[in-house]
Length: 417
Image (cartoon, rainbow, N blue to C red):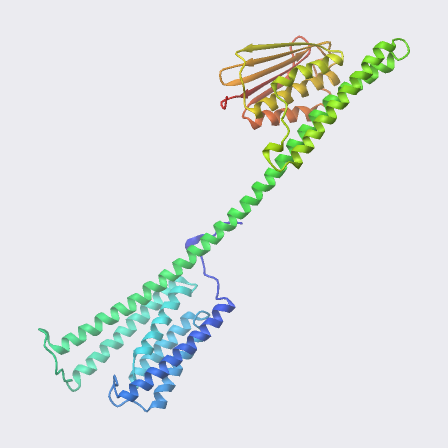
């Protein structure tokens, strides 16, 4: 999903619930207008002299309230209609101005909050505000040219007429600026809400992608473990079974030893497979089977020797504990390298060296075999590279200059315990 250009964002139209709410607001405003107009007429507290009769005043209130039904669907048109009706109602001296002023405020606010074209929203509101001040100025001039009103309780230092003019100007300035600013704030709040919703959706998509990646990585890990376990033990079993078949008649003792090795290797493979299944089914860390590590390497060497290899093993540096993940990866790298030697190299001797460096564990497995890869051995090398890459290490694998094949892996051990 491409992120919108937020400076060019356009607010979606009102929802059905918001449209129903506008109808309710229009009805409520009309009821308030009817009540206020009735009270003003009952008190005789008219803003204008010689107002029309009560039904005519109520008709003006109805005409001003009805456009609010569609104020969020057609904000610009509603503001223009309400502005024209507001001036017309004052021209005909239609009762009180309290509720009509509130309706005009709501119309100006709605344009700021909902008009899609922001240039039109800005200049249309400015135009209406300027028109209202021109009308206010016209009304003041008309009032000044007419009979001077009585200010019985005037006691301030200013001329009462001038004070009345300044009061009207300041009140209307605050009124219209407040409607303008609140509308802008509502638009900005809606845009921020859209940004938050977009970011929340992006976060959800990212979490889903991470989950899929984690599932794929876990599947890859299981595939590597299955390959390492099955390939190594089945290779040893195959070699021992072949040896038993060749000497079945001539050397029963050797046949018995070979078959015993096959049996032991099969049990070991079953135990490791059962351990992998236990990892998949475990509900807590305590239930996980202890993974093999550096201390289990001698058992690998015994299996390789049982397959007919001459295995030499050397440890260099100061042996120390390494993180369990590093130990498991080191074990699997040696296991896969020995499996490839047994299956593909045709070697007689393999040398396994383990070096404890200051910040890394280095493994080196070399043999005296053919010194070239064979079809089918690639998956194991890919698995070794993936295991080493998980820890930020490196792997080198290829033919030696003189003879044989060399696998060298370096695993960082910063998290030494």
